[in-house]
Image 1 (spheres, rainbow, N blue to C red):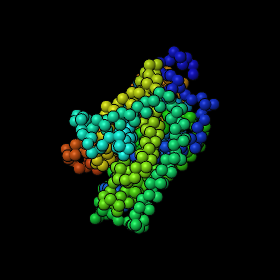
Image 2 (cartoon, helix red, strand yellow):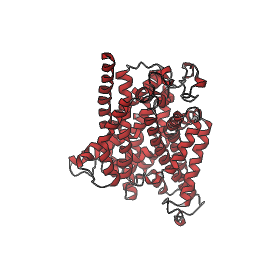
Image 3 (cartoon, helix red, strand yellow):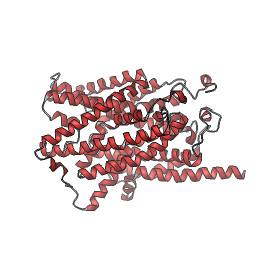
Image 4 (cartoon, helix red, strand yellow):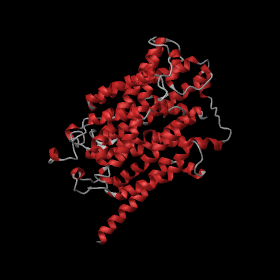
Amino acid sequence: MDNAQNNPLINADLAPVAIEDRTWSSWNIAALWIGMAVCIPTYMLAAGMVKLGMNWWQATLTVMAGNMIVLVPMILNGHAGTKLGVPFPVLVRASFGINGAHIPSVARSLVACGWFGIQTWIGGAALYTILGVLGVFDPTKDINLLPVLDITATQFACFLAFWAIHVVIVLKGVESIKVLEIWAAPFLIASGVALLIWALFKVDRPTDLFISKTNFAEGSNFWKVFFPQLTAMVGFWATLSLNIPDFTRYCKSQKDQAVGQFVGLPPTMTLFCFIGIIVTGATVIIFGEAIWDPVKLVERMGSKPVVVISMLALLLATLSTNLAANVVSPANGFSNISPTKISFRLGGIITCIIGVLIMPWRLISDTQGYIFTWLIGYSALIGPIVGIMLCDYFLIRKTNIDTEELYKADGEFKGVNWRAMIALFIAVLPNIPGFINAALGEPIFPPIFDTIYTYAWFVGVLISVVLYYFLMQSKSSHRTSS
């Protein structure tokens, strides 16, 4: 790119990927999704549906439906990455402006930091279990020495140890993440299938796991749980629908990115969620209660070799997901704030630090907080950004963007596109009262806002697309009349 060395809006990590350097095939994208989808939060989300009253096929279909829905913006936004070769923070400059792009890119980065913290805490919990089983310390005598944090010193040490592994890989660069995903994908699927086989052989009658029992007395009660769960399922990968260009920019063709995502995302998510659902059903028969946290489940298995091997698999699953889903995007996002001063590696370190400061163990302390406050809450923000980006790229610009202009401070996309800002603000607004009700656990605002909040992602996308299109058309009409 011309004058790249003197351009404060570009660095080696944010520059367009040259055609000859786009080496990712559909298998690379599929492996990426397998590595991200096979993770503990995926298992917890699906098993949490069972805990809330769904039977196995209701939960499985909910997962499948949610992933087929989010696949659409995933492939559409991935199109821009492959065509232009630019990452998400640069692409979003087209719709929000060079300066305005910091709002969605930093917002996406902060959400990723939250997810990074959650995944790292879960991995630390697995490490904690391994050390306890091996007799390194006695979990029954592990007292709370950190009352401010509400966790024990040993738990915090395990959390930091797993965190340090991420830091080392981040310092090695993005290519090491790609290699990890390729090797991890087959092993992770095998580990999930092994867990399913354990459940089927452990119960006396495996057919009992597929009896369509439900805890809903009336059909209407099911829908009250289904729609929030569907929104949460969409919200689970809503962040990736924003920054999927961070990966599709390396693809050889549009076919590679589309086929790779179609093969890698819905089938893997549905399979692993199905495993979580069936295994959780088995825990009810085996242990007399639904254990929706796989870390706690493995702790109950008894055999030391089984526990250690299972926990190591969980550690790999968490590591592969965390690095791809929750480090690449914020690293690029923070780099975009000041490309000449913040590299991908420094952005990754910033992500790791914020992931500790948010105290992630509080976010997943229960199903209510995990589903309604965290997943649906940030989907209310992500949905409008996705809507604006897709509307801008496909409806306003017809996929025609001059890549050079994305790196010019005084070019076509200079400053802030206030029309995008207005559309974002108005699209988020209807979901704020429902979010406050969910976060506080009290009906501060009327029930109608809770209903709107149930469809947070969908409401945000719809409002933002319609409003942004109208505002941009008004801009075009104004220019024509001038």
